[in-house]
Image (cartoon, rainbow, N blue to C red; front, side):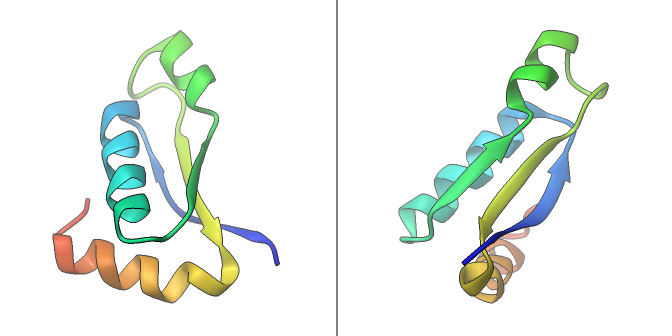
Length: 69
């Protein structure tokens, strides 16, 4: 059981919306480097949206269906 990166986003707000969308669907998701991104501002440092490797296919399918990003 390990984490995989679904997306690296340069807008922390969009990253949080995507994380919440996954959580609402029952897929645990975490944001890495969100503190760095908020400290330097959007576009400077990416925020990694991560899920468990066994949830990767379902998470990608859900985000693709929602038109993210």
